[in-house]
Length: 265
Image (tube, rainbow, N blue to C red; front, side, top):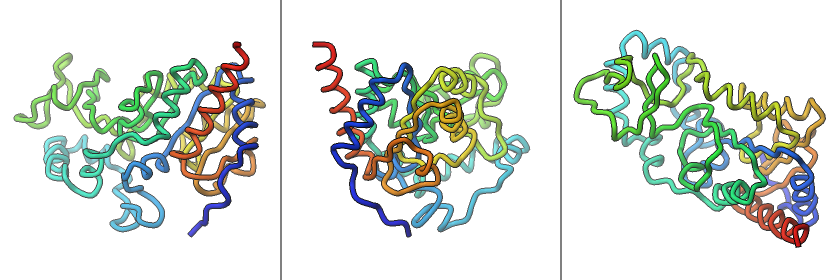
């Protein structure tokens, strides 16, 4: 198992903060490492759900389309299992709060998350794309409309879209399912404008999310990594801030805020 290296130094934090303030359009890409710090088990790696129980079928979306009623019955039956149970009680950690604060002070312009846990929203983040969906939402596979789970009755399965009467499914993206067009377009739009990406709690190896960060780097942009372990992208990052995101990101946000105040005073 990979071992964490020494925690990010004050000098590294300061360097990263200066890079962020010098950028014109900073965005962030977050992954499972942030969820784990809120008590949500990962899918991959030691202790991961897929490591313990095996990966789900790669044609999950096709299975859903073949029998939506059964897929909904399976979802309802599993609502307290090892995945859904922790999602129900998880709360945003200080890393989520730090990124939301970076947005609130006008520094962070957009956030792309691979997590389905809703924690960035709960932390107050506004401008974000949940590229793999949100477990609390229900999405129509016909018109793309999204609804809070509580808005949709499951007395009849599969439930119908209130807008177009299409089939509803969980907003979480299944294997074999295309990323929803509206989410993908938002990611492409903001990545195209970005000149700096904060990569937090992810090795940035799962596509298409990883591609947005790498695209910015290939254009000459800056990558700042905040992660507990070294990752596959560490060699190409301009700054690697080692440590839990719940510790590193608040330090980074506090430093950005202080430098910004000094600059404005």
